[in-house]
Image 1: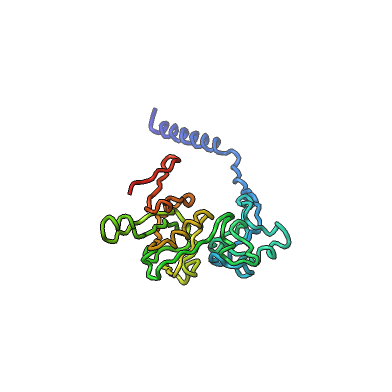
Image 2 (image 1 turned 45 degrees about the vertical axis):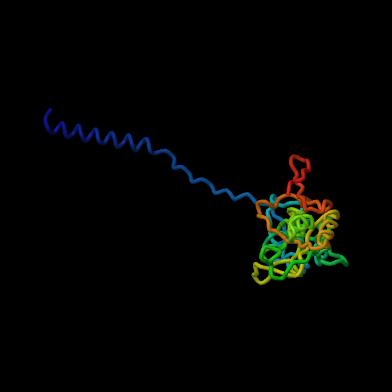
Length: 268
């Protein structure tokens, strides 16, 4: 086979390969996928705070606004425009039991109609009492003034130990925790932070107690030579209800400790 024949054979092979590739790629051009419209989300008009609303604020038209909210994320406590034609009239004048941030949904369980009573009686839970105790204005009896409303505290009684004084021949002071994990409702006349202040002090502290605890704290406050101090609890130690841990009846300031559901008197 001479060179001319070899060249002709090579050209033929190349032409056959090109024809084969062209034939196998000559199918129909694939069509671009159709863009499907996004599924429509069902929404509802929900009442939200139009601005930061402090605790104890009476709701007005300027306090709230309507905002679109996904229907699937509604809770039964949210206030919706479809709930009735008089929904705004029913809400106006209500007091906020907690603070609301701008854009936060208003909730029925966090609003209360004050009626003829004051703010404090409006925010108290059923069965609870608000009791004021005297504190000093310098903050010495309440964590240097860093205790704020809604903080949790222990109430410590500092008193003169008459028995120890007689035995020692000089004045002996003792201390006793009588209540633990108490919610602070107010310090002085302040029920919230104002103008960015982080420290609020006053002449009294208002505590949230049940009726029996209220009697105990009033009695402790009026016992001779007795002073009450508030001890701030850590946020992580503030869960649960208020506990009565001190026993004033023994006159010695003993501490009652609950262990596995049974009360035990701690040694002094």
